[in-house]
Length: 395
Image (cartoon, rainbow, N blue to C red; front, side, top):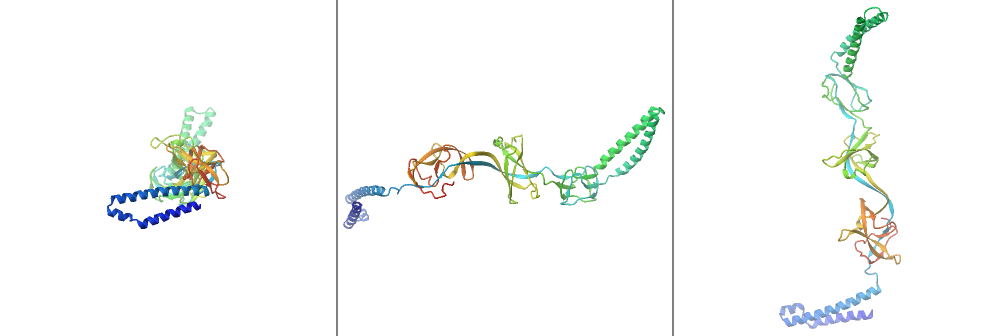
């Protein structure tokens, strides 16, 4: 060490003395004296070579007395197998098959509306009535005629059973009675159309018309009926997922507007590939006990399309790629003590990603120690120093 310090001091003195006796570089350049300039250049080159030798000697000495000076510092973690679930993230909207605008089946004046907005109704409940245009009176007349026809038929039947009277009289009485019954049944069917009833249980979302308005069959909207108990989300899935997204797959449903998240599953998958966008439909059931979820509400979906119970996950940030396009990481081998080891480059094959982590399909096995921080600065076969903290083995 004393020898090194002596060399440095002598070199400094020589440079200082030469500076005092000789012209500066600027002065030589200004003098245009080629011989003097060449001489000074040769001197500086010789000094540079001498300094390079001295610096090399100093580096060698520093390496011998401080071998860890240029050793990269790294942290590591141990790879382990764990359950890995991959999710396909999509967007969809809430729908219900029981959301209709009710229209009348017959023409006429709306005589009465029996419900109001927000009212719960049951299937078959009377919602509104439409003027029958005199059908009730026609029915009453036919019923009177039918009563007479029934009496006549019963008498003719008794006589015919006793072999009294002609067969034609019996058949005429029977035909007239049965014809009037069918006419009454037909009028009953027409009168039933004047009573608007709920096709399913639900809530009256909107009463569109008013009493006294004229309704046209199949055209005039009367009210909207919605059932919020059987809601579902419909979305399009790329055809590449046709084998991985099937009935029963778990789905996480989030409603950003409501700040609400719930778990559901795929209840139906489509059997038709849309040729326009190469997708198929899926339906996801949405439980709605509190009625907060409404039709056409936007939802974000995370569908579990892949699960591996024995997956190895590593951070994506530690993966590099070589000139051949192969992905690699560094593992630790030849661990000499607690903090010294050798970095080894390992080619890996990766699979699906989830967040900041990626699945390793091949190249490493469980419990191998992998370089985390400092992975971009080490080289294959290089000695490294491990500076793990107590919790650094956690990914």
